[in-house]
Length: 321
Ligand code: ADP
Ligand code: TRP
Image 1 (spheres, protein in one colour):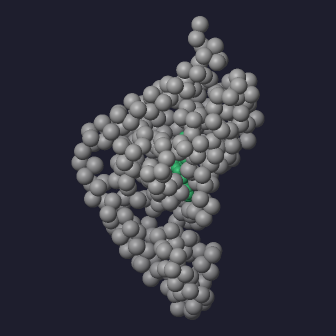
Image 2 (image 1 turned 45 degrees about the vertical axis):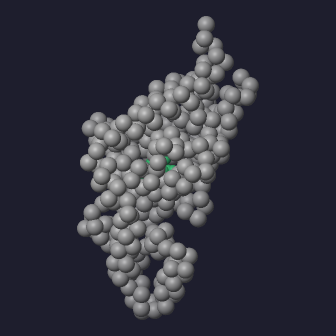
Image 3 (image 1 turned 135 degrees about the vertical axis):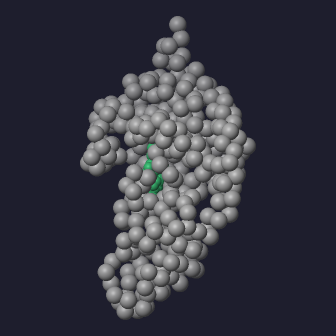
């Protein structure tokens, strides 16, 4: 089975990315053909600062490697290093109806948050479809917010297959429903672009500041609390075994719980959880060329697969003369 997913280097990676996508991707490397990439072309739709994008791209790769992605067990590369993504995108534009893109929630959300839309943002799902179809992926592990993008991908693939006969595998979204949307400090979806994230690799002082900023309700210490509508609980449970989660839930349901104390415990828990990976990351940061070499080799391997699909597509649509 082929499993594939990508992540945008539009900012530092956070625990929503980790639990929503990175952890399951790393788990797949032992049991599937795994394709994992950094989607810097997608990030161009929101980042207009060249040096920043370049730095975030390398850092996203370092994060993945530090957290356990093994480039010998998967295909790991940067999207913009494999030109076939862009070429297939152009071909797929011609099998994508305007209405399909106009209905995109992600596009509408971004506009409602004040982003001035350009054509790249509008066409974003077509590039994502090309990313997936180029590698004939069966399963795409993503968070809930990407579900519609997968539906758009299947729609485009279906249209192409209808016109030219079976060509593309129709991929399934792999969404872990128990983790589907991890809230940020303010209770909205944690996102790199909403300034509400807890980043994976930050200093302890920064971690403390972020955790202390998690918004909680105004119940008094002696009140019983509501774990199911508490942002702090929703974040804390990600790091807990089922038994520890049940214990924390009980503490919420007894008078006397102080959110400030739970926050202090959460700082220590997050800090310890990522401790084993921090040393690996520091090592990679000191060897950027080593990481660049891994990505170049990954791009070479990815291109071999991408070229096979593209050769078939080019022949079918009539680009060979
Ligand atoms: P961001 O919104 O932070 O820019 P991306 O859009 O790059 O994140 O998402 C990368 C991956 O992480 C996607 O699969 C996405 O669904 C997942 N993801 C991002 N934020 C969350 C979240 N808050 N909860 C669950 N998954 C998330
Ligand atoms: N749109 C995805 C996100 O924001 C990133 C992405 C780009 C992706 N291409 C992909 C995810 C292909 C899965 C497969 O998270």
